[in-house]
Length: 196
Image (cartoon, rainbow, N blue to C red):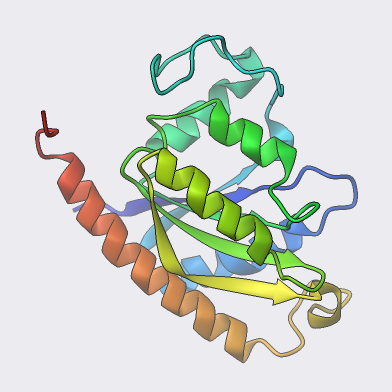
């Protein structure tokens, strides 16, 4: 089997966001893990209008999308699995992340998804719980293990390094182990004829 492709998605596009720091840390963990070929997708690089197509992508899997979304759509389609790096905004999901999800369907279908959260008190868990519900509707499988950074601004130093890296690294390994198992299983399952 060729290397499984993991897309790490930076879910926040807010000015001054911390997401790229967390994504950089997790990407290094994923590369050290060695089970995946890693692609980092920054939603700030995509054109993500909040206006959605008239027909949902679940019914029309290839709607006309803005030209600035073509690279994002292709990279999502190429991925075998995803890890979404997200804060929570007002106890939920960043709008740009929700738009990226809602503009696609087949790109998520029957794929495994993990989460790395960061935020104030919640560490992103409020967004993660909403994302589990959303991806269930899209026939994706969200894995149980996750990594979270409550009060992230106390946990990382000015250079973006974790002050106490051992416990988060252990959580990342557990996430990646579980994600690899589910990804391999779902890649094999997607090769089978779909149920009628």
